[in-house]
Image (cartoon, rainbow, N blue to C red; front, side, top):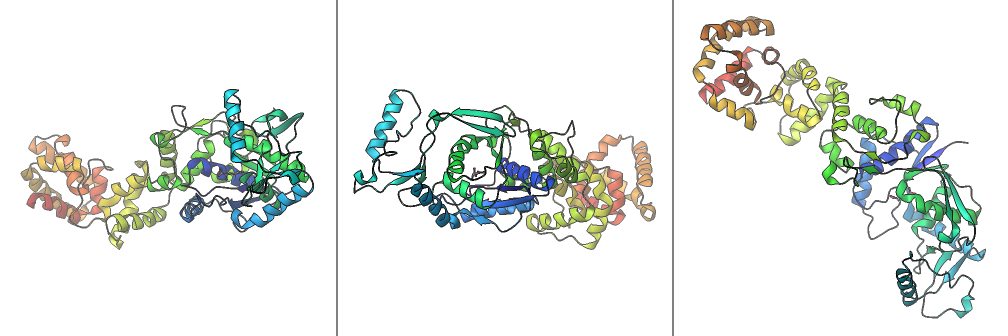
Length: 468
Ligand code: GLU
């Protein structure tokens, strides 16, 4: 049997990291079993579903490279079929019309409140003759849930769970305006899409019990379920903004690589020994639903950053330069010219080692591409203000002597000699030079940078300070 999984987001907001992880687990399971991964947009809630949200989900999936098979299914387009199933259940006597008024339902709610029990519709129309129905009320359609016995679910992650059928209610499958409910639509779509495995958040577990009633009534095969634990914040409370970014888009904006986010999300709840860095190839090879932990995973921003640094180191220069091109053009309106590409190719390896995210990498590489005036960070400005201009005028003269052999060792030698002659320490000048030629207070080794930029450029940058 070919496996078929699906990701079924409701497009009512941003693309949350929890949803992205659900998509990833479905995708990996499909890849691992050489099955299919389908995408269904559950847009039946007209009031809350938006085009903008659909775009965010699709952009996020594309950015993460979680490609889906077949065409996207829009649930709202399937309502006719959902209605047909509701009618079929009605005809078979497995569902019924309920003409309860709002007042009657409110009374039931109040009674439940007094008895401190959860509200459950009292099934008053289950056996009633529809001929007795009031004329002024449009009925809903309710499913006949089993009254006696128990319902059992064998969930791959949560294990076997039993619920007494007394806990079940005759829930609504079609509203009085003729629109199908979420509970019905999900089942009909999963059946029609031949879904074999449902992998979704733990918050859907109670829905699974209800949805099973529909599967049983229709005598349809039930998909195998896996309910993934939620993601918690680092302090164990529900993940929220204060624990870090929530939406996939935010991670992109923060300079997290899609490969790093995939690796990190995979490790949120799934493990393979102590491996932290897992290539996509291995993830596909090793993935299994059984290995997803039962307890909620805690989000750890530092771990994500360390995974991100790892993937940044693995990037090829061409890929980085492509990113820098769009970053610089939108933020600084700078184009990367040929000389800058040459410099970047010499300098990026070092910068990659020091970068936690792509934005930091871009800011740290900017001095290789900048035209005057160089943008100077706040901290660097402090150094520049304090620097003694005569020292740097003299330093330029000695550097000029080696301009035809401007190599890092030579530069280091000549600067050491210069310091001895002047009775200075390296710390007396190093941060100042760094500030003048990079505009930063942290950078790769200064001699390496000087060699890459070359004497003419270094002279220009130091003179700019001296004359400024
Ligand atoms: N549309 C539901 C949600 O976004 C998921 C439904 C499902 O996976 O069965 O939470």
